[in-house]
View 1 (cartoon, one colour):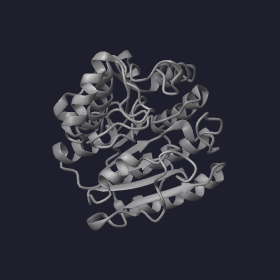
View 2: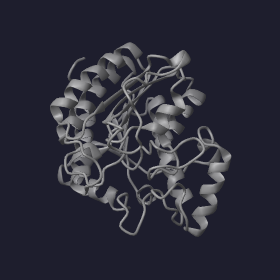
View 3: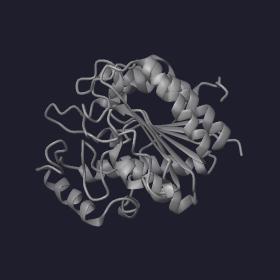
Length: 322
């Protein structure tokens, strides 16, 4: 079935509220930086805007342990303390903000599955470090893991592809699903010997019934677009084997040169290429279903440029055939 309105973009204060104060790299101004650039480029006229949706506890519990959910709820009231060793401080309203990220991502997935759109983007999302029982690395709830579980449980999907080009390895997703035959992962990231979380080695290819379905492509500090394109060729080969029914794209912008906490040197052209190719692959294998999640990115200009490059490609009617 052909969707009406090809691309949905989730914007709103409830989604932008996910962020940390006091000079934290993941501030609540990140969405505004993206929206200003998207408006300047005229991109908001090429998409359908959707309001954020707050997920309920039963949705979050598809991935997270109840003890973790309750800890987040408790610290959300006081706004004091940390959810991990120091990267992820509590803030008032944290539970609602993190639940809105998860709910918006799953709402987008539901719309794509219902044929109400072919592609969607949730810019404040892609919180790929949180584990089932804990927060980590600025990530309170792991919306990536939640939506994978949601697609399996609600929509019965058995071939879900998760592609991650954030500078940091998506450890919270990888280790949650490394033995799940319904999930295929391709993750291009800075080598864990040089960057948090210190994981994602090439030898890690999945376990048990999912052996060979996980592709880690660590790159050295300073890797540029040429290095990215070489790695990307392996991603496409991997996805062709998967023949996914749905593609999730974590398009973190902290892999762009000049990010304050990482060391890769991609340009936004890398993000544009990945988005264009994933759109084409989604058309071939997944009835067009491509869900882009903003991920990291702590240089506001880089973030705006990279996310707009993705939005331009998933909204552009010109395809590069696989």
